[in-house]
Amino acid sequence: MPSPGERMQDPFKAWNFHIWPTVKATDVFSLIIKATLTLCTVVSISLIFFSAFSSHFHRLRMRPGCEIVSMFSIRNSTRNNIGGDRHEKTNVSHILFGIGGSAKTWNDRRKYNELWWRPNVTRGFVWLDERPPESWPETSPPYKISGDTSRFQYTCMYGSRSALRIARIVKESFELGLDDVRWFVMGDDDTVFFVENLVMVLGKYDHNQMYYIGGNSESVEQDVIHSYTMAFGGGGFAISYPLAKELGKVLDGCIDRYASFYGSDQKVQGCLSEIGVPVTIEHGFHQVTFSAKQ
Image (cartoon, rainbow, N blue to C red; front, side):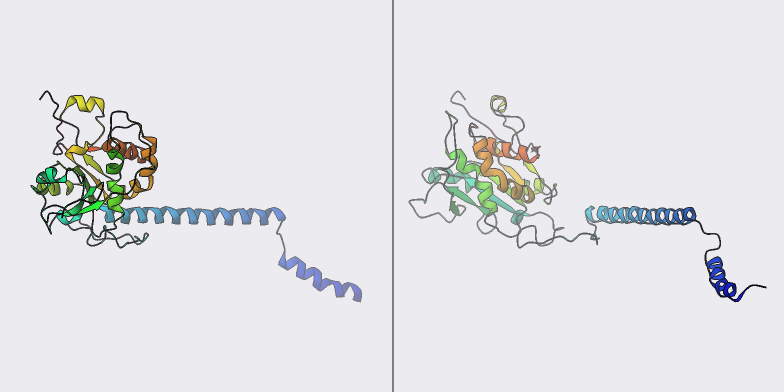
């Protein structure tokens, strides 16, 4: 028969035996590892399903004509131009023209612009080097004065510093902050646009993407001298709003980096190549150079 002292210790031994009858340290460690692996597997599967679900809705949102908007992204709308109905078909009101001109030569060149310009219909400005000496004709596009370019370098021996001012027209046009502008279309003061054709061509492209659209020169000599990868300014070229936004951030620095380039269109193309956007050739943009021999 056990002594009273031994009977006092028995309850503790029994408690210890029933609570941890066979558990070993290795068993506890194995249980923790299994639980961790199970949790990681569940989390991984959840992330895979989330990613697939998100991608599916994103693709639906990007399809033309589809009204589904991804619940996983929020578009930050601004006061500007890509506002309004994003699915609305491109029309003439979505185009902002930027025409490079000169106060001294405008009276001679205005006849080309007045062939296609429609007051109160077309939008844009002639960018001049100085204020014109005479009253401005109502049949011409309204004008603006270009910013000072004296701080920029220009080292092309056979060119004109006016190329600096004209290259910055797209930047200055963007900085006006006008509403519902999808495309910035640049041209010279003797460029003639067929507005309906231009609207039709630009309507083929997604204005929410980065596009640089134009054509080469019809003079092989000019293409060889300058570039086949450039949209010639004489035929006009178009830059979508998102690309104009990015171009505006780097243009001034590019102008100095490409100080030896002859023309404004060359300088713009050089900057766009740094952004990584090549020209999209549309053969409806015609540039013709007439030499003294022709």
